[in-house]
Length: 231
Image (tube, rainbow, N blue to C red; front, top):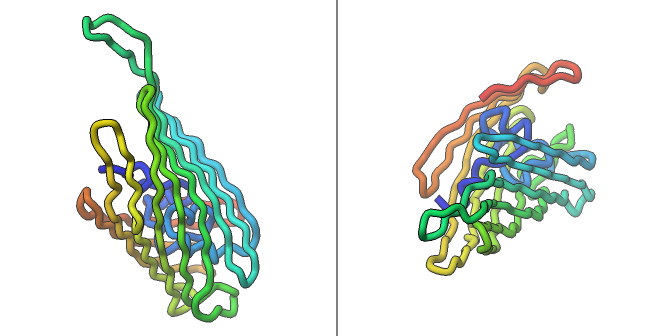
C-alpha cells in the first residue's frame, strides 16, 4: 500500500527490536516511530543507517535530535529506498537503456512534555508531531506530497511506558499522471518495560493499516558499551 516503505521505519535499535518501538522511541529515530519519544533524549544525537538489500536495492536513513529545554526537542530525518537499475525496452522489445526508481521522505519533528516529569527527568506524558515531505520517482516521472503524524507516550511508573502514533493523520497525496495515491491512516500502539537497572528493554507493538493488522515483539539488552537486540 502507499507509504509502506515509511511504515517499516529506520534506525538500528528500532529495527534490531523487530520494529517494536512505538512505546520505546528513545533515540533520534523517534522522528519516524513516535515523535513523542524525542523527549527521552537529554543530549543532541545524530544517527546513520545504510542497508544493502536484494537486487541492488539500498536504503539510507539519517536522523538527528536536539533538546531545547522547556521548548521541547527538535528532530529531523531523511529516509530513502532506492531500486537498482532495470532495463528499459521499447515497443519492439529492443533494449533502450536503463532506469531506476526511488521512494524518500524528509521529516521535521517536535516532541514536548504535557504532564509532569519523573525524578530521572523523563516525562510522565509527552506528545510529538512529525511533518513530512514524501517523494517518489520512477524513470523520468517524479511526484511529492505532504503529511503529518502525531504521537503520545505515557509512563505511569518509571519502568513502564505505553505509546500511540497516528501516521498519515494528514495523508500525503501523490498525483501521478494517470492516478493519485493517498497514504492510508496507520495506527501504531504498544507498550514497553525496562528491567535490570534499565539495561533490559522489552517491547510490544500492534499496527492497523490498509494492509491489515500485525504485531511485533522485541528486546534489547545493554552490557557496558555493547548492546544485543532481537525481534
